Image (tube, rainbow over all chains, first blue to last red):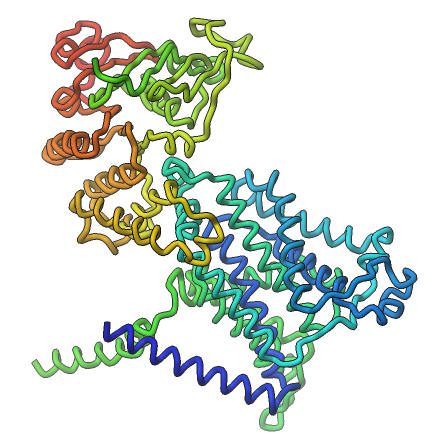
Length: 360
Length: 280
């Protein structure tokens, strides 16, 4: 019981520190790199956790994430562009045919719902497929969808291949953090429920899970729809963050980015995905930026430091992670204060034991 | 007369041109331990898989507690290919996925242990409780079903205690010794509240002492959980010890049935199976 109390106190302290930091960044450095990393990383954390729910917890290898994100982003954008802006946004389509403007939070929720509807349509035939085949089918779905959205005929709704903009954005960096934290909290609740256990059972052994009375088709669909819902919400948040939506940006590379975060963090670990997301976004957007600029050390201009070098270093780092940390940062473990304490204690304990051995 | 639990009637299972099980008739009554034995490849596990809904038999019918759970007749491609007997005897198709069969009250274990090996021992049993829970997706996901969740946990814990597995509760299932993994698999099957337990070679890979313990254990759980047990087995000692009745299968055909003493002295059985098996 003592541990529980200690953990609670530590968690409260952490929460207070994080909140204070966020409020400070929000007030003082609203346009800094740090602020943009925090926003983008929390959105990617949500996307990674929702993909992890499928890949890591249910064992369904899906690569449709970018497709569901795109659906979410478009739904949000289409439903929330203020009416007076329609003429300028849909300038090639006479102001478009969607003449509604909903509040932002309704738009975000609708984004999730639309993603769920499409996920159901895709999941019905595709979820019978196993492993790689499911990955190919969902990847194909995302690619097809990207083409369809850019189709001229759908222009009055989706603005075809033109950009959608002028919809409501975040007014504070706290908004995406809070929304994503709440969504991740919901996913964690689900994972720790009876259904979460059923997901894990399917991941471990489909045949045994079915013999234990778990309806494979239904349970897989539940996981797929939940993941799609949060991917849709994440897509809407990403749209708000970027302040514009264009189908061209939702490529399969985006899915791989998120998959990479899941792998770096640990397949089957929610906290791993969150940590992985912050590390990934911070390094790709911020910490490794300097590699793209030419630098002069000790009077010598380093020749290979130029635009694009960042991605080279980045790829090497990822290769190293995949080679030497195959389990990712967290493996399948979750964050716990006990784990942190043990981690810092271990070297000391070893040293202590060694000292005792040397003396004896 | 004891109530009939499982009634397998004229079941034939044909894969392409191969008849794996041919015209099997078999009954399990309430409270009985019935064994199905036979040499390797005789079709024992195939028969099991027909009962549990993994395979759809080509022809025949299976009743469970008076309800038809499986029925099929050769149709489609099989119509021409069919090489078994009793063609035209059945005309309905009744087929369920394995989870529905489990829900109706038939639980099973597997020949090669299929635990959720990376999950804890406790979780393994708890997962089997999921099926009978009344929660829906949202109430469970939002943890609104605390009373039910608590009950599920208590029941799972009680089962572990009963099987003497409670001290391994938090261990990873795959790390348990072999004998305990078998026991856990049985505990997990019991957690689905079955009326009939199907054990697929429960003594496979066990030494004589473990086998003996298993025999006691099987009789115990039958009495405690008011079960009927239908098992497929290779170990003659185990089968002769605990079975009320034995069916012998050879090349998919039933060649003998009766109480253990009859089977032991049956010439056909000795020819087909016992003489060979002792040396394996």
